[in-house]
Amino acid sequence: MEKKTKKKYTETEIKQALTFVEIFEKKDEIDCKGCGYDTCRDFAAAMLEGKETPSKCVELSKKVIDKLKRKEKELRESLFLNQEILDAVPAPIIYEDKEGKAIGCNKAYEDIAGIKRFDIKDKKLPEYSDNKVYNELNDKLNASLLKNPGKQVVETVVKYPGGDDITIELHKAVFTDREGRTAGFVSILFDITERVKQNKELAVAKNTAELSVSLLKKMPSGFVIVDDSLIIIESNTAFARLMGEDVAIIEEINQGLKGADLRAVFPHHIIFSTIIESGEEFYSKDIEVNNKKIKISLFTIEKNKTAGAILLDLSIPDVKNEEVRKRAEEVIRENLDTVQKIAYLLGENASKTENVLSSVIRLLSDNEKK
Ligand code: SF4
Image 1: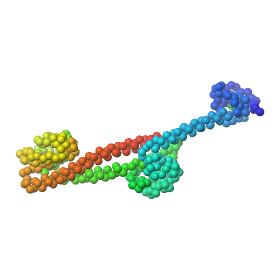
Image 2: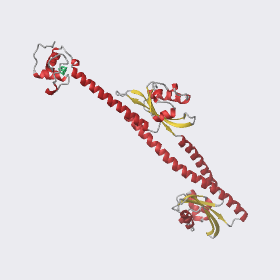
Image 3: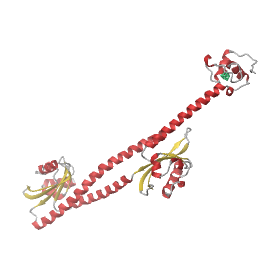
Image 4: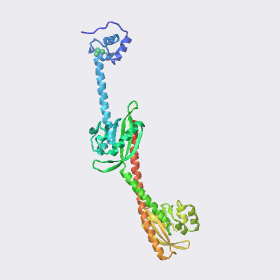
């Protein structure tokens, strides 16, 4: 039996009531009778009388269900896309709730932890990791971040499922809900094993280089190292003395003559240009400087970039000269190895560090936007 309303309402009142069931135009009044009334207008009048509520409109319910389905689909697609993006990141990422229970992770984290994301969901780290040091560190960071939300960066060691130890830089930050309240933590792990190893090698190489230079400076024979523009990188007092009194005075002020132009102090500078341009390993000849006979032995330190030389004053007794020359050549050769190693390490390290830093900036910037 059709439901009826008693009161009459104005057109404006009916139109307003119809908006509650999302009927905004005449064409939307489909009069399907699903609500038990002959027309949508009768239903609107019943709502104005307080006899019905919008939820009784079958068409509105359908619209709401359609909207919810569309939203759910969008949400699923968005979550899928987010997971795809996370999986494309080569650094392991895990995100946990405020209690430290895992919400999800990316493919790289699955690989490093040797576990699937579905197996860690809602679990705390100690439930799937036996690395006590890392687990305790994670707990401490969580507690600290809850007190002071922001970011923390720490270095630690973790194990691959295969058993290899790797040094990681753990970047941890909080993420928030819509109201801006802390909702959990996101961790990004950067493998810095190679960087740490290279830094150690670099430190050893630097020490060796410094020791070698310090030994060279104390030699009775002259030594000098120049770059491809013939600018002096390093030299010793003996070299300055061989170059004459004026140069020796300058060397007292500018020890090692660093930055000085070799052309201004050494008349045979052309032999340095020759060895740098040719890239030849070793070259030796006798020359005369300030009326002194000198044996100069040149070495390539970095091909076409840096060369060094040992200068022996041949007025020193022969036996002593020979001993000094041999020792000096030995030291130069050691120094050559060290300097070449440093150049390689500096180049490699700089490029790797740049890559890692770029990733960190990108990832942390992404995290901040979420
Ligand atoms: S169910 Fe909704 S659309 Fe159908 S007649 Fe009632 S008010 Fe109009």
